[in-house]
Length: 126
Image (cartoon, rainbow, N blue to C red; front, side, top):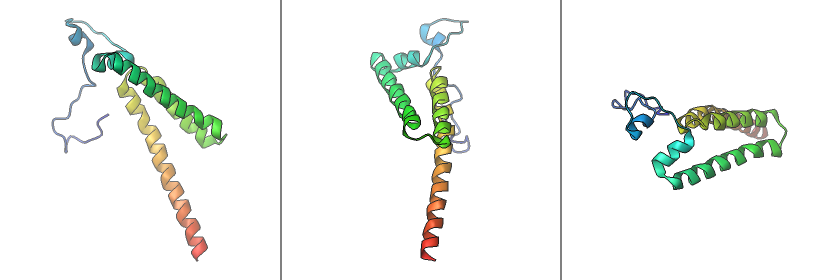
């Protein structure tokens, strides 16, 4: 989640957030929570409502990929987004980590479209 190298950030945190057992005051116990629990502990009920709205918007955006076109690239991006959202139900950290593949796909697609656009322009000019 923190892609900044330790060279630039020597005191970079290594934990994934908070320890639920420590928040509850329990010793020698291992507890886990879902993303809903993270939202509640971080921001209360407003966080739960806001986080639910965020996940709903992300799922809605992903579903539009299947409705608009039946291209295989849309199916791949939809699958990556669905996987990120499914894994993200465990924690926000997982959502961010799984989203890196979507961002990489978008960046590569942008590069390819830019290259194609430049090639078309050079063909028209030359």
